[in-house]
Amino acid sequence: MSSARNYRYIVRIAGTDIDGSLKTVYGLAEIKGVGVNLAYGICRRLGIDPEMRIGYLTDEEIKRIEDLLSNPSAYDIPSWMLNRRKDYVTGKDMHLIGAELIFYVKQDIEREKKIKSWRGIRHALGLKVRGQRTRTTGRLGLTVGVRRKRR
Image (cartoon, rainbow, N blue to C red; front, side, top):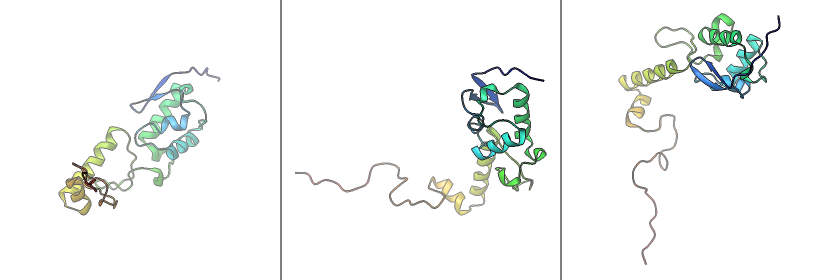
């Protein structure tokens, strides 16, 4: 059963348009919520050549990739590769992609603001959240610094 591989300039996977000239791994990494490591895992699990251009994927391979992204546990993807382990509400390991990922992140930030955690307060004030320095960076408004003496 040999299927002819037609080249497509744009491939649509999981609601994302991907340039067909990219290698499979880097093309899959274009999907929000899928990184290069997970993309390698997907290729290995489905038996797809990671060096092949994504424009040469068949419809059946694209369907298998989308199925794996919607339900990675059915394909024995390890839980440490997933981007939402032990979900706050359900307690399950999930992998979110696209708009769903953005929605969950916003929901998490709103929850932290509501309970007034340190991170939530920093988000509410528009300050840096992850411990970066704020003495000189992240400023808004006029520049502050040494002024030259007028002659």
